[in-house]
Image (cartoon, rainbow over all chains, first blue to last red; front, side):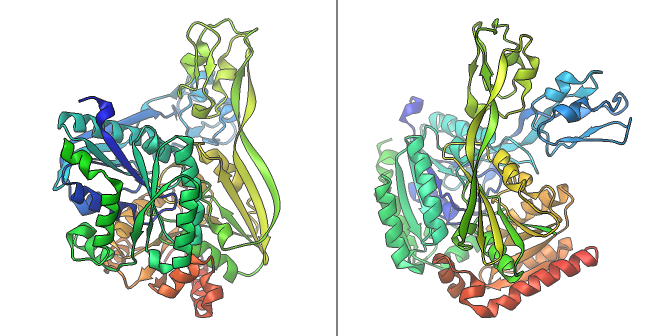
Length: 299
Length: 282
């Protein structure tokens, strides 16, 4: 099986908190056999529903971090002058300088130009990623370190591992729970995927953010489908959003009603379609309309 | 005082808290929308646009007549944004972090810098509230330089509210740096609790005083409250799960305008933050 045969569904939203993870968990249950990738690496929640048993754990090291050896620092201020990220903390006159690890970009300029070579540049540990078993198949997930950088690279790692396991297990479908926004981790989740499902809500923010995220999917030439969660909160806005989606070249995949059982399912650590929730039927309809079940079955 | 409003989880009500708090503080308040990927505060603080400024980052430009293809720039760059294969180097501006390293290491002075547009900073006025927002261009990966540009408009002698993006990584850190106080907005659900605990770790790492606002009180369970009690974290305000707030929000209306009974809630939030700061976090 070649990599290109794997279908990758990425669930994104632009705006946060619209229900990506609740929908992704339900899709994982409905697919029966898929590989699941949680690419919302700085606020990963899918594990709270799918209760993964970790099989393999790996450190995520990426980039480097400047550290001044204070005993050798002459306090000349060259690093402060050259750093463009405000990461150098000046000591008093003639006192040693220090690097704020949270602000350090890891570019290495200070390391290279320190006149007395007093700056080390160790690799930084940015988090970890795990391969786990769940009731819906294997899952790859991660945890970005506190205040760590390179979330985009960690996303790429999670996706790469998910595709590798899909090949190994001869599984045709990878379902990706993506991050909010349109920046680096979203771009890393999207590029080269088969289909993006954008979950939005019928609010002025949902509408505004959908427009930007659909421009992003178009920019990277990824086919997009849209569904409106809590559609009955504002029906006129739902209709406006669906018209906007079509205008921007996305397919409307369905609507999910406002349903308090979504939170109830979360408390039970279950996907919405695993409990008797009014919105479970809506989610099943969206899953069907995506047409991915055939891909799983063919395999 | 600079108050940052943040949350691990998205959609918990950061913009609701920022905009309503600003409105209840009266005039002379600055709201700085640092969610440059998806800025939303302008949908609720609708005002007259005053100015718009293009933000660029400096990326390298190679003068091939001076370059002798030594490859030093490519060996130096940690981000693979400039690559040399025995010829004049290729530049990949999308990968460039604008550190300026390549211009410094080039032994022939063949590399200069030119601006690459990443987005805009827009300022508007709405009933005494000044809104500054960044808008990242579509397809641009790196938000932090634009967030720094938006924050350069902060007038730290007045009241400033920073509306942060969701999550706990670089864009959030870039937002929170320099804040005097952080309000973490969450909801009483398992996702809300999990992402709150990550956000608490982050704010503690940055050593900024903080408190919690629990939105949509009534859904979920009491685990967020238990967590806050065990960790000694102050709960500054609770916003009930009121469908009327959600409906007003859906239309772009602020709770304090659509439902005047919420004015006192936000006034109390501000009072609680001030008392918290005065007491040194007791």
